[in-house]
Each structure stands twice: as structure tokens, then as C-alpha cells.
Image (cartoon, rainbow, N blue to C red; front, side, top):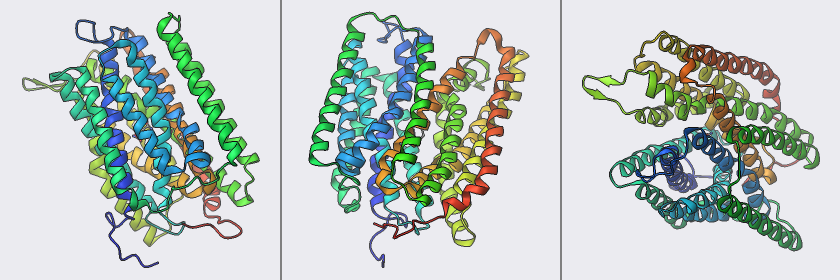
Length: 498
Ligand code: GLN
């Protein structure tokens, strides 16, 4: 095909639509996420919920875990009922309603707002990521760099969200900040609506629609499940359920992992796959394992590294003390700065040599992330000896974590979109997003070992995380020399293009 039309940084124009929609969605997500623990732990006089740190961080872990878990049903709904375009649209609307509810100053409705954000993100997040991949044919070398650009949009959104919501929280109050997240999502929706033509027919229809009868039954089941969620939420809010957040988080982590395995096995054996589709799914398993391990370490950023910043880092520059929260933006700022390099690297690499296998890139990303924890191992030793460490230890750690993230995360998205059978596109992305979920919960549990009264144990905790991740990384690296052949296997008959 001759492409003489307009492009978006050399990419299909549809990427522009998806880039800005996801940018605004992530602005609302990360803006709200930065407020969450602070709001829940703030006293009643400060307008907060006055929860303990332990319950607040557990709720936070469960919230972020559930957000990504819902990608699984969200992907299914897109594949079989709505198609990607409508899934993103309705998901965005539900997210926006959630943020509007959060903006209402009332602590009961607060959790209802969170449920809306969870449900809406499940519908939007995996499907918008899958749509990006559908912009490219299987031969198109721009796919990896397209995902790198898309990933930059995610992080520009995160920078805006942290900045705007952080500012409003300080100077206007919590609910203005939550409201800003709703406005961000609304801008994203308007933009999506106005430029949806760029997507043409991509994701306009479900890839493997149900029969009209099956459709009806599915909507009834979905309605039933939603009513059940509403009922449980109502009971939890009106009664006083005695729950131990840490054990809930542990059980949820185990359940999510089990669901991941079952779903993967089900698609593999019951999905009516061709032999080559099965081999490609085998290659993707490595990508998923790398991803879950990666986020288990990486997501310490918001928890244990955040506490390390607050308690053991010398943040004084002259007479100015760098706010703890600023360190949270380092990751997204590094991403935005480094993404163009990575996009260029993948595209040139792909043109000149063969593209390195997805498994190899992901393993390298995992190992680089792990090396960031070696830096923390030394920093924690200083801290354990009673010194405050210089900020550049954390800067170095976040830098390594970001380089690792760029080797793994956009690459993994690209791999899933390329190697999954098309009719499972949304669901496979949902399964992949489940690895975020597992990683987020495990990282929360690991961070639970951060004990300010036993700081001497901190170095060994970071060393263990590091060595474990490096071990898994090396194993994935070895396996990927085998699976790199599977990755390149095409379908026996005609591989359907867009
Ligand atoms: N920053 C990435 C995103 O928002 C990944 C988040 C995660 O926790 N895995 O898409």
C-alpha cells in the first residue's frame, strides 16, 4: 500500500488518536493515584479519611491490583461483545464518572468512585493498548517504535497528572484535585470522539462476536455480576467488615496468579489454535513472566523507595528541602526524555539487523531493573549505618529502573499485540495487564518488609529482590534463544492483515 497520507511522527494517524486518549486517561489515573494514600491517611481536620498507614497502603495495593485485574473481563468484552473502539469509549466514560464521584466531598461515596475507576479502566486500558497493535500489519517494522511513542504518551500523562493534582491538592484541596482527574478524562474523551475517524475500521467490531443469543446471556451475566459488586460494596460500606488488609492482599495475589495460569492454559488448549499460534503463545509466556517479576520490583517506587526517600535521603539543597513526592516524577520524566532514543534504536536495529527477540529484550529489561536494586543495596547500607544518603543514589536507581522499563514494557505490549491470535487480541492484552496486577500486589507485600525499626535488614531485602530478578532474567534469556524461533513463525494459511 502506498502511504502518502498524513502520519503521526511517521506512524499511522490512528496512533495520534490513541496516544492522546491514553495520555489523558493516564493523567487522570496517576493524578488520582498520587492523591490516594495521602488522602486516606490525612486526618479528618485535614479533610482526609484518617485511616492508618497499614490499611491505606493495603487498600492502595488492592486498588491498583484490581484496576489491572479488570483488564481480563475488559478484554473479553471487547473481543466478543463491543469491539475495541466502543470498549475504550465506554470505559473512558465510566472512569470519568468515577472521578466525578471522587470529587464529591463524602467519605462513603469515595469508595464507590474507586469502583467506577476500576471497572472503567478494565474496559479501556487493555483494549486501547491492543488497538495500537492493530494499526500495523505483521510485517510493519514500525510496531515497536509505535509502542515506544505510545508509551511516551502514557508518561506525559503521568507527569501532567502528578503536577496538576499535586498542585491543586496543596492549594485548593483534595476534591479539586480529584475533579481535575475527571476533567482530564473528559478532555481525552472529547479528543477521542473527534478523531476516531483516524482508526478507520480498526476495532470497530468485535473480533469474534457471539451469537445474538450468547450476547444476550452475556449481558445478563455481566449485569448480574455488577449487581453483586454493588451489593458487596453496599454491605461493606454500611456494615463493619473486620478485614486484615495484608492477608487479603496475600490471598488476592495468589488468586490472581492462579487465574492467570488457568486463563493461559484455557486459551492454549481450548482456543482452537494452530500449532504455530501455540508456539507463539509459548514465546509470550516468557514475556508475561518477565513482566510480572519486573513490576514486583519496579513498583516499590511508590512504597518502599518512597519511604526511603522520606526517611533516609538527605534532601536538603542549601536551605531548600526537595519534597519527597518530587522523586516520584523522576521515572516518568526519564521515560519522556529517553523514549525518542529507544524508538530510534528499535527502528534502526530492526532495519539494519534482525530485531532482537522479544524475550531477550524483556530479560535484559528485567536484569537492568534488578541492577537498580544493587544500587539500593549500597545506599541502604549507608542508611543502616545511620547516615542519610545523597539524592543521586535514588536518581541512579530510578534511572536504571526506567531504562529497564523501556527495554521491557513497551516491547512487551508490542509482543503481545503481534504474537497473539487476532481473535484473542483483547483478552491476551487483558492477561498481560494481569501481570501488572500481580506485580503491583507482590511489590506491596514486599514493601511491607520495610521496617523503620529494623533498618539493618533493608540492604539484604534489596539484595534479595535484585538477585531473584537477575536469576529469573538469566533463565528467561536462555529460554528466549529457543523461543525466538517460535516468535517468527507465521500462520500456516494466510495471516490476516488489516
Ligand atoms: N506505566 C505503565 C502504564 O501505566 C505501566 C504501569 C504498571 O504498573 N505496570 O501503562
